[in-house]
Length: 261
Ligand code: 13P
Image (cartoon, rainbow, N blue to C red):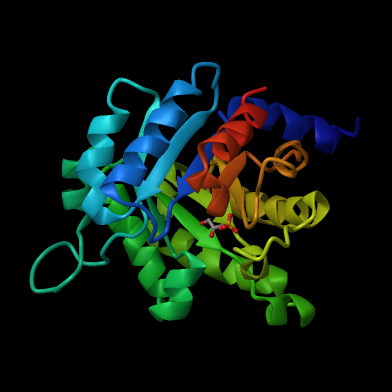
C-alpha cells in the first residue's frame, strides 16, 4: 500500500459512512408511512448514519415516524434569506423547529430549474449552518461539461464559492458529488470516475480547513443495490445521496447495509 493510500484509508476510518435518501417531489402521507415503517424495521444492523430528505409538508409526519430510531431528518432545500417577505420560501429556523439535521443545497435540479447560482448556494449553506443544520452541498458537471474536459474546473468552482462564504465553518458541511448525467439516468459514474473527483474535492477541502477528515463526501447519481458496494469501497467515498432507490425500502436498506461494514 502506498503512503498516500494508507493516509486516505486512515482518514476514511475516522468518518462514519452516511447514506441519505433524497425523496425529491415524491410521497404521500400513506406512502411515507409504509416506506418509513419498512426502513425502520430493517435498520437494526445499520452502523452508518442514515437520513431521509423529505418534501417540506411531510416534515412533521416524518419527524414523528423517525422518533426513537437512528434515522435522521433532512430537507431538500433552504431559503437563502433569514425571514420576512419571501413568499413560498422556508427558512433554516423553520426547518430546525421540526428537528431537521440536514438540508440539501445546490442540488443540480435547483441549479437547473430554479437558476440557483454558486453564490446563492453558498448563502444557503451559510443559513443552514447558522441554524445548526448540516448543509449537504451538491456539486457536479453536466455531460457537455464532462465531454469538454471541464469536470474538475466546474466542481472546484462550485465548491470554492461555498468555502469562500463559509470560512472556518467549512469542516461542518457534507459534500455530495452528483454528476448531472448520472442522476435518474441509470448511468452511474464508475467507481474510478467518482473516486477521481472525490479525491480532487478532498484536496480542495484540505487546503481550506485543518479538519478535512471530518467532512463526509457522498456520491449521488443512480446509486443502487448493485453498484453501491463498489462505489463505497473507494477511499474518498464516504456515503451516498440516493434518489430513486431511496423510495424502495428494500433497495435503500441494501445500500445502508453496504455502508455498514
Ligand atoms: P438518482 O439516485 O435517482 O439518480 O438521484 C440522485 C440524486 O439526485 C440524489 O440527490
